[in-house]
Length: 423
Image (cartoon, rainbow, N blue to C red; front, side, top):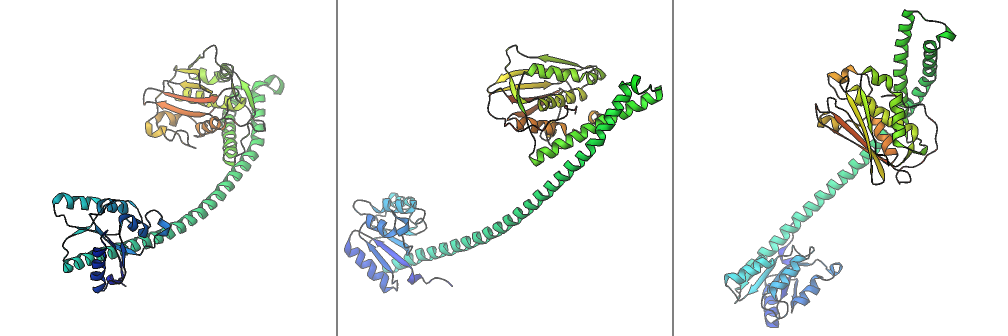
């Protein structure tokens, strides 16, 4: 139902009492029963609640504002009213004896929607007042529709948010169940697999004790050994993934020398290095400080990065490992001269099960878990990891690891771990 214009309130602002009484009489004679009067801009501000928004009744729907008032004139009063967010929608009609373009322009610049010139013509006055009130009624209706629409959309959003929360809880429960199943399955696989690896290694390396193998048996057992170690690596990786996702990854923090730790890893990888006829070059400053972390996990990080660098480089390639101090950490860089990685693939490089898909990677074994685990192991110590690469020009993976006594890593009870496997 549309609002009756004559029931809407009008505020008359004029410092001359005779003018106020005359305007009030004309308006009430035309049926406008709710007419308020103010003798100055300051008094109008009080009625409108300009200084106290909570005191504004919201009953003023239009204002007739005299321009030539002492103190705060009509232009300034109009500007102040329009500057208040809760009053800016009230249409203001300026009452002026000035008809020069500059004065009229100033009135509109102050925020007035219309003007009435003196001496007043009652027909024109009432027509312009009705037009202003009609504008206010239309604005109120649009605002009401907008608010109602916003409330409806807010209710829809709250409902959707509640549904998303329920779905997220269900996904979390499903993810936890999946992680628990993965952890249980890999634990169950690990025990028999450890026996297989142990007995195969014993048959190959202790033939004087367990009995000699003929050439064909030797070949078969070497194949079993190779694939058993690959399966053990996968099981170890899956166990680490389940620990990370369950938040049960445990770290035993000790002080370490970077060069010594890296050299030990390089020594343990000699078979892989020799198979590709690669060369690993280490370059460390003599005064490099110590780092703090879990020794086996640091070894796992270096092993993964070196293994990838060797696997995805051409035979006889050189892999360079450098280190430098950076703030509270030490940054280690592993650089290769391999095929490089595209920008699109770099964005996904540290995600679970992702492998760059090209002819070279398809020839190499891998699960796509190594770099995912590497990132989490570095971050678990309070560090960060990043990659720089250009297709055809090699890749550099660098990570920053906290120095001894640097804040960031959180110590946790050690549950022990098998030696880091090559990824």
